[in-house]
Amino acid sequence: MEANMNKKRCTAIVLAAGRGSRMESGVAKQYMLLRGRPLIWYALHAVEESSVIDDCILVTGSEDISYVREEIVAKYSFSKVTAVVAGGKERYDSVYNGLAAAVSGSRQGDESPCVPNRDGYIFIQDGARPFLTEEILKRCYAAVEKDHACVAGMPVKDTIKIVDENGFARQTPDRNFMWQVQTPQVFDAALILSAYEKLMQEKEKLLREGVSITDDAMVVETFTNCKVRLVEGDYRNIKVTTPEDMAVAEAFLNCDTLQQQENIDGKRI
Image (cartoon, rainbow, N blue to C red):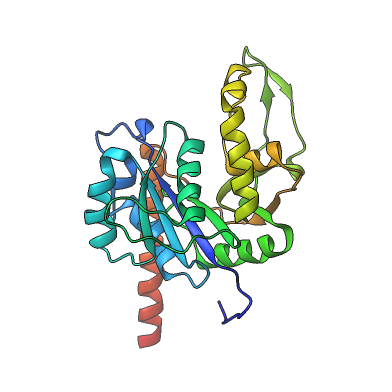
């Protein structure tokens, strides 16, 4: 990103607190090896190398904090990670814990306090998405500057069916208006904090009503009047959730390696 004196501070909250039960492995998915590196390495590396992101809060399971500090952050020299904080029971609990650390600047244990980010932007990123790119981050920054709230995503390729409780097709929505949502999900810091504080106050009521909060955009949609802009992500920006996803990620990395080798060979000719 070209030097911009007016650029607002951007804090990434990288989520790695899930246990990944669908991976059918005794190892949490974010620590499973993908081409010799922990899956979480890829998202953190993208953040570390980005000209958009200034600092990072890493949210993980409370039992994993020491391991993550030593075997992920220190081992791979992720200098932008200013705090490793404990997640919660649900994704939204983990995001809220990350937000609290980002906007307060407070840190746990021997971590040094950090300047709080109350006036910049918050980039919320799934740690299990290994194909975050600088291009996606730049597009999101441009969108949040203008619209205050945006999420990366891509138009769906398949026909989508809404089904009833018995599995019968009830409705076929117009595919032209359907997007699959990815991360990062990016917001004004004050906006997303306000929305999450309202969610924390109302979450028990929502649970009783059977409302499921599945992403950050939904929190903003539910508790503020701000519209959320959809920004072009990348079809490769998958979330690794199942063993099949891991195989797809391996294939993408193999293609990248092959392309890099072909480029090198082409220069030698």
